[in-house]
Image 1 (cartoon, helix red, strand yellow):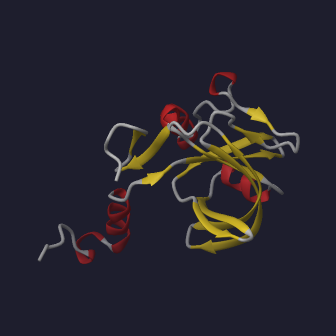
Image 2: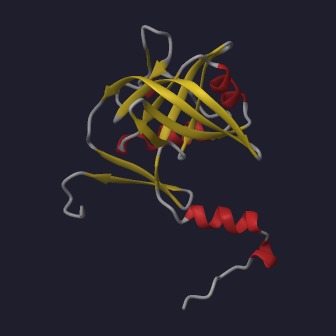
Image 3: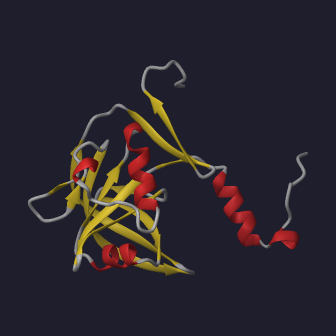
Length: 173
C-alpha cells in the first residue's frame, strides 16, 4: 500500500489538491471573446465536453480582467490547441503576455469573436450557466458552431509544463 507523500494536516488540503491535479495531464485551450475594451483571452486546462444533444461544454475561470470579459460576453470561442501552440498557451497564461498579435495567427469570425484558424478546433459558444464555486466560476456553454482545424497531434499540460504528442509516433494505445 502506498503511503501519501504529504498529509492534509501538514500542508492543508488546498496544497494537496493542487499537487494532485499537477499530476493529471490535460488538453489546453485558449478561450477568447470580444470584450468591451477589445479582445480578451486566457489559457484553460479545464475544458470538458458536457453534452452532445444539445452540444455543450464547460470550463472554469478564476477572477482576472480576461475572465471577467469572457464571463460578460454574449459568446466566445474555445480554441483547442495543437502541438505548435505551446508558446501561445504560455502567452495567454501569463499576465501581460502578448495576445492577439498577427504572429499568433488570430482571425475574427463574422459574428465578432476572435478565433484561431490553426487550432485543432474552435468552438463558438454562448454561456448557458455561470456557477460560482469558491474563487472560480464554472461556465457551462451551448456550442453554436464548430470549426475544425488540422488534426496534427496534441498539446498537453502536465506538472506546470507543456508537452506535445504527434500522431503516428507509435506510442498510441
